Length: 248
Image (cartoon, rainbow, N blue to C red; front, side, top):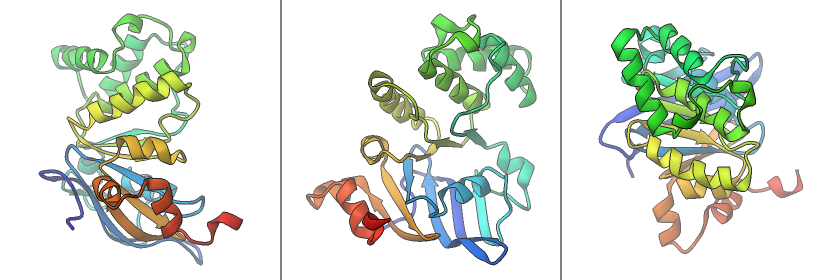
C-alpha cells in the first residue's frame, strides 16, 4: 500500500519523533498526505495528534526524523514550507470587530498578497466557501458556521498545498456539520487535507484514508474503501486497533 493517495505528496512525516523532557510524545511516525486527498488523523487523547499538527505547521521542531510540506523541510526550509501550509486550529482566533472582507484582506497582506492578485484570491475564497452574502458583515455577528468558514478562508487565500483542519466541526449544529462534509471534500480538489476529529462518523464521511495513533506510535494507515470492502466501519476498526481504551 502506498503511503499517500494523490498524484503527488502535499506533506510527509519521515520517522518523526518528539520528546518533551523524558516523555516521548511522538515515536517514529511516518506517513504522507497526497495532493487532493483527505487524511483523518485519529487517536485517543494523549496519542500524539496535537504534537504532530504542531510539528507539521512549524510550531514545534522534531526531536528526530523530518517533516515536509510541499517538498520543503519544515526545519531546514521553514519559511518555504510554512508558505505551503494553511492551518485552522480548533477555536481559530478571529478579529470579531472586523468585517469579513477587511479580515481576509488583512490576512492576505500578511501572506504577501497585494492588489489585483489579492482581490482575485478573495473573490475565489468567497465563492468557494459560499461567503458572498456575508462579505461585508462584522465577524462577531456571524454564526459559528460562518465564522469557521472565515477561518478556513484565511487559511486558503495563498493556495496552500496542505490544509490542516483541527476539529473543524466542533461546536457546529447538525445542518452545519453536514454542509462542512461537502466543503472539506471540495477543498481537497485543490490541496491535500489533514483533519482531526473526535467524531469518527465525520472522519468516515470525508476521509480517503485514516492514520491511527496510540501512545505516540502509528498503529495503522488504512484506506476507507478497504475498510468498507472488508465489511467493517471506522468505529469497529478504531476499537480493534486501540485495544484497552474502553476502561480509560
